[in-house]
Length: 158
Image 1 (cartoon, rainbow, N blue to C red):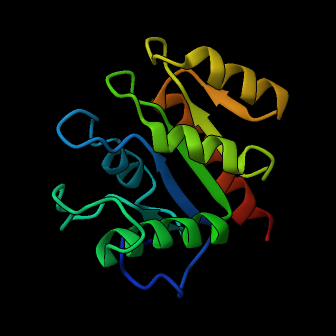
Image 2 (cartoon, one colour):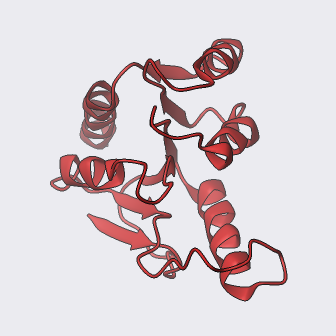
């Protein structure tokens, strides 16, 4: 397993490239990215995690801010380069950027979505997933199990 966190150079990879999109809201969202990474630790996979260790919430969220620009550019570049996008909507969050990512990648055929009961816009997420035939899961545990099985199946086919 190879793990990249924003803004690390992620050009080298091994196995499928899995981007961990979804809720990050500091001190609100659970550390779900760690759970997914831990569950895939024994597989030949590259994890792309946008949760930045040195994030500073005082950074202005403007294109002219170099740190913010670097973060968003890293995320977009790696979403594009990923083979699988795991998109998790934590019910304790609003996750506007995750909703944006759902819209951007809905027709990509590489989304796996987990939107548990209680997420404030679950109805919208459900309809977008239904319309675009996106596989959706009720729990992160269920999504991770399916993701593991898919990666193992794919690697055994080679």
